[in-house]
Length: 100
Image (cartoon, rainbow, N blue to C red):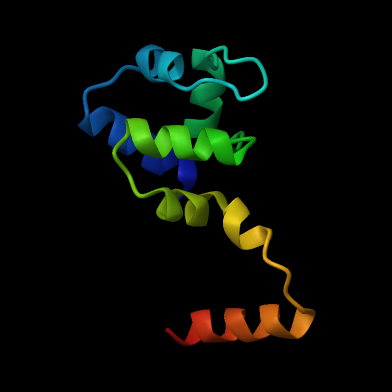
């Protein structure tokens, strides 16, 4: 499953239109809602969310786990990215993740 297909599926399960969902997702930089076309591009996997802020808003509105959405988006959350780790520590964590 991709980020876009998950968003589309959950949105439909909750009975929310693309226009309504787009109106609930505010851009971090100016507080304005994203456009329905932008959301459509996300759902069709032509675009990815541009910020942690957007991933977390989508998760909240769709009542989804934000960590799962980060996984689907292919990015690590800011709290993990900000940890100071050596290259060796990063490799060890990825190895442990792959084993589980």
